[in-house]
Image 1 (cartoon, rainbow, N blue to C red):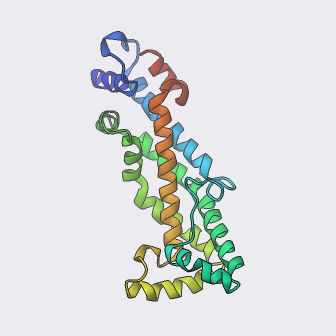
Image 2 (tube, rainbow, N blue to C red; image 1 turned 60 degrees about the vertical axis):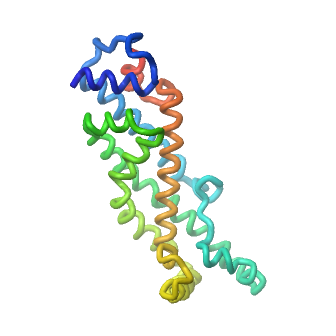
Image 3 (cartoon, helix red, strand yellow; image 1 turned 90 degrees about the vertical axis):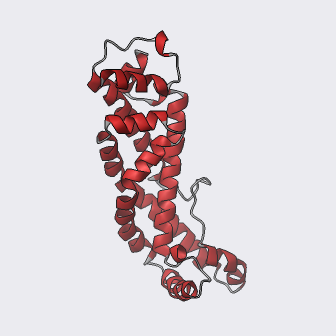
Length: 225
């Protein structure tokens, strides 16, 4: 097992195996270093999004009006509904910002539960293997966790109920995507998309500069490479 973990650590920085010596590190240190790096990356992603304007003013993850409303936006604004649309868009993004901090516990647990087999897949996989690992381990639970909080926020606006009623009927006719027929479902899905996107960015930083992106234990592991 020690040999496997050493090889995996070397793959992270894509360096020649023969140029380094990890013999001074224990298996727990080697695996712990990778886990620490993943925990830090997940924490950074949550911290970036789970604050005021984390979604609203971030063009990478900003949640726009659902497709049906976006299409009808010019007409609705001409009818004097602009304030309602603006309030809905702001509320959707604020709801995502409020929900995301809940994800940290699940993401940290997913990192801590990583096995040697998981680590091998992560380090020998594609450039988004960390992101895909987190997504596979947490997406379903995060959807269930986010939805009630998002619904609580969006239900405060009358326009949300009006949209859900009309979009529900339109969805039955095939005019609106089912996943967009309820504001709360739409926002929850977009919040998760944004979270995994930011985790992907953290992953890129980790792969580009492991020493700079990692914490103390990970630095000890990567510093021995």
